[in-house]
Length: 159
Image (cartoon, rainbow, N blue to C red; front, side, top):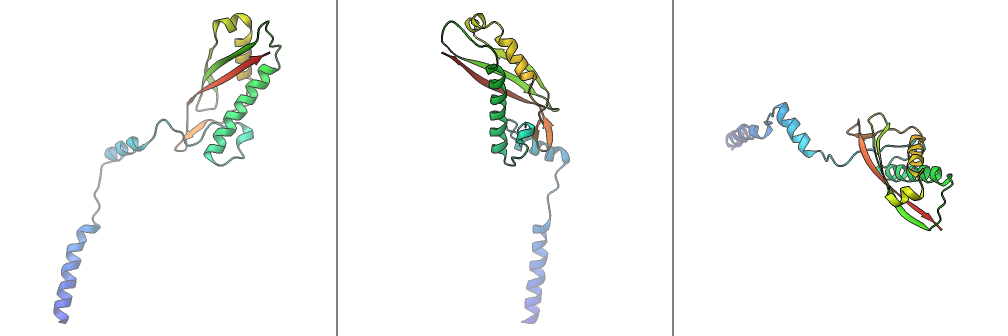
């Protein structure tokens, strides 16, 4: 009985060795699999203003960034003498990139032609408000700073 048990144990040990073998893949295959697994549309950490550094969660940082950006632009535009002869209710789109170093570039301002006629300096005011933003920390993807593109809708209302 003892011999049968030892023989059976030895047979199981020899058969089970195949379960401990690992399949080796090349670094190119590993790289290709990793590239496919990355969601290129999402970032791990949003750009941040110095005021937003205290937040630790991704969603909190995103909300803080967007809120701070809106507040800076609204404060800057609100300090101007924005007056028209007619009531105004329009949306301006500010599109821009934030570089790997936190610099804002490629600012594109989508203004309605009628709005341009009513407030000729508006585009210049938006450029000045974006240029006067505090220093930004860039967005990160997998611990590496990346360039990001943002669109900020700004609603202008006068009465």
